[in-house]
Length: 294
Image (cartoon, rainbow, N blue to C red; front, side, top):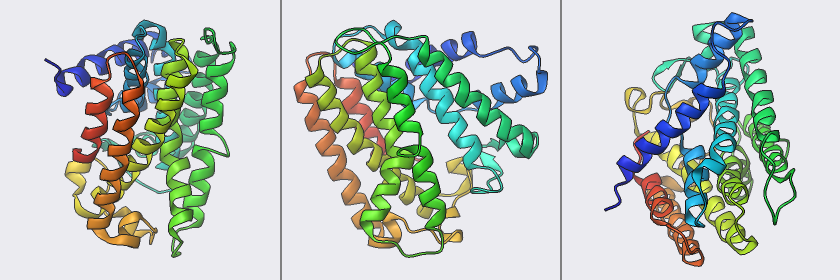
């Protein structure tokens, strides 16, 4: 019988073993940089994005071993975004995953360089993984680059910063969410399909799935920031309100935000009917997004 908690724990352990195997050891020069890189990567976290890549491969009948290094690359790129997001010049947060952020544990210059190093290493790892047919060999690294760049995470971050203190329309807010948070989540499932050699129709279905759960994930983040506490979140609660950010909660209220997230998850799950592998993990992960506490 499928149990999500057991599945997430097992897959997270698989991802962490891959990360530990490939990340430079703390003793490797320059010591401070590699120590701080490992601090940021192993400071906790759900490993949701790499697990989504593994689950997407499983949903098309693929082997998770084919997705192991691409999944690890996704996770260290995600970690870079968090390190830079927490910087004083960005969101200025001193707590992440219940621990001091990298700039708080080390210093701001080290945090900048840690983020730079993780970003660069993510592309090194992904470049070592040529996609199998029917995809061109460079497709995985291209997918990650598009998700991370000015039309993806970085573009979403700068638009998010520009929107602080302003009331922005829903369309603009959804664009920020879909880039800053949704782009890498969608890329995770797409990379899982492509690394496992999935057919284009499976890629189309999981692109829809990834887009919907990515947006739902950020809406739930907005809800948690407004309703939870710092101890539960593992990061500073109420930061959106203090920064006067427009969120789905500030635009529509908690009830409508929750309804919107539920509808997105329902639509995402419908896409799984087009696949022929084991889709139970992807469905359970989608449902779990609505119920998460941090």
